[in-house]
Length: 239
Image 1: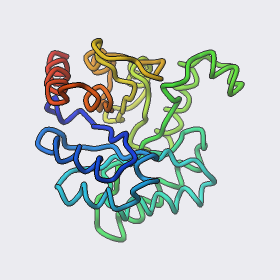
Image 2 (image 1 turned 90 degrees about the horizontal axis):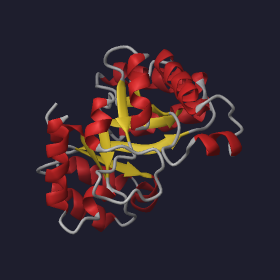
Image 3 (image 1 turned 30 degrees about the vertical axis):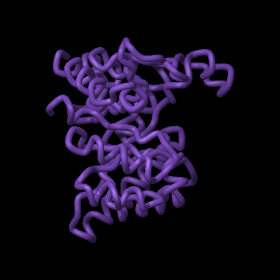
Image 4 (image 1 turned 180 degrees about the vertical axis):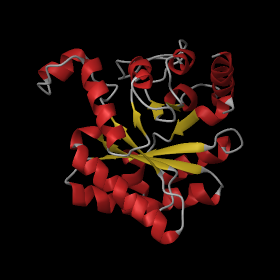
């Protein structure tokens, strides 16, 4: 992939028009845009339709986490929207993930279409070892938990996982070739870390095994977003 094809630009805004303006500004440089819960709750499917009308792809980042039948129906709805990729939460368990995968596979077969990439969130990059233990009462270490969740997602038929860059190397070493690793918490050395705890630079994330890098504020909040994107692309190419 070319450097810019590895970037998923996060539309971390709540206003439909603001999101459209960002897509318009970057549609010549970026192929995939992330629509998360804030924007989707505010703008609904309309924003996805608009992005598709511009010839771009959507990563729908809603982290479905519910009983298997509900997640299956939500997955079907995402597929009907034509998104390129969406995610569920691995902590929903094997049955939930496998049911979603089966539903998507049946939909693709029935409609003679390509199903969306289905990936699973392992552990949020805003969490660290202390919060994992104290808040969620999960005793195994961070790496052990991520390894377990990623293996379960792969067994369930999923295409990959959302994992922090520091876990990417371990996931890559313990999964089949082609298993996707989508990495948030990407911060070049010249931007603030914000509320992320387990972060890495674009270059380091790719060297550790990431396929796609989710980047938002490190580009859109800079005084010159286009220049920030060029610097990130250069760092990716160097990796």
